[in-house]
Image (cartoon, one colour):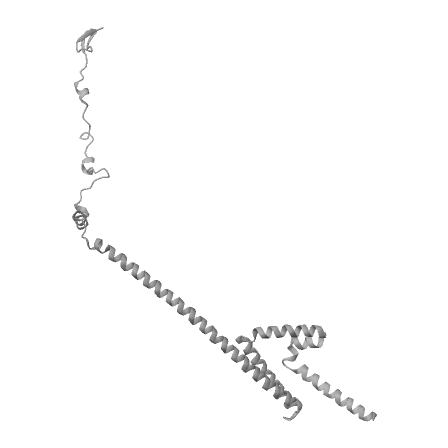
Length: 235
């Protein structure tokens, strides 16, 4: 009885050692925060972490990066488990192979459900974008039509003014070279006349200056007219 008990304990110890070696060499578990929490946290902490993980998974399950990441993790886990099974000599009928097969079927079903939800969200997104684009194009077409009508109305109103010929003076001025016009300053005076000599431009004396005569001098007396036009002699 003691020997059988020792063999049983040794068999369980070897199995546990083999399991721990698999866990240590596993590609996903050795870098998983959930596995570290499973080994280090209490039951209460594990329950809280599990609830938070389920909430995050339900929110991000339909996102395309999440689907790609989960698919890649599933492929890596399947390849790693198959390689470990081949090294340890586990056959297709072994309990580990059975668990692997069940996990693979469950993962496939979950992937299909997630894929359906993702495609539904993609179709909904495409429909919303199509409706917005159609509305935007309709508004743009209406704006272009309204602008065209306003431009046509303005052209029709100003057609009479545009077809009216210009005045004769304006046409003559537009067709006459600039050299044929006399050079005049801003006051309308001919510059040639202004450039004449100063003597020719001297203003004539006023009328009262032309009639003024110097008083007649007679010795020491001077004669000047009085207010009545008579002359009087002053010393």
